Image (cartoon, rainbow, N blue to C red):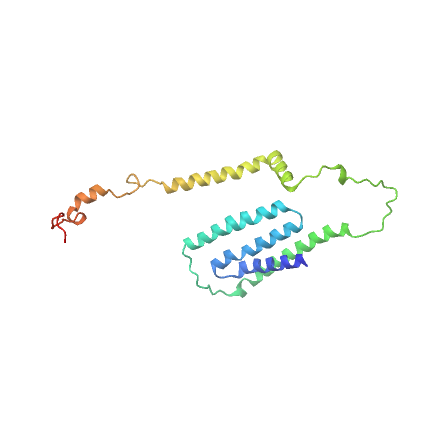
Length: 207
């Protein structure tokens, strides 16, 4: 029941991302997808991934996309296009995805079906009690910082280069020299009468 409640809105929102003609709506529809996906991760017991998923996707990616859409002044008028024009291509892609889904489910679920096998000759040993239980955070930390530390540092370097590039582009020098700025003293010297108003009355007199 909980799986259906979480997965159904995620599927509908995912379809609306592709169907929405308003760019702002296309950015807002992934938010329910990320929210419901976090709930599904909680059901699977991945508490750390469920907490970090909305923080990264909703708090960073979706908000940045929304700001980009608002900055570019994209026309919000609906784009009238023929839906039947893209129907053959979308149908072929959909059939391929469904075939892959059933192929994966078929191979994954058949070994789990109950079978009548004689297991009297096998020794029953509780191996779960002999393995040290780690939390999700400990497991991710051990994998990231021990085996995949290179792939953990490469995105950090990419983000550093992007940050430096943004700063360099902001402080870009023009062909004529430095960034154009207004010289207040030179401006006042050129047009003195318009910048400084003469006082005709005596400042000591009181009306």
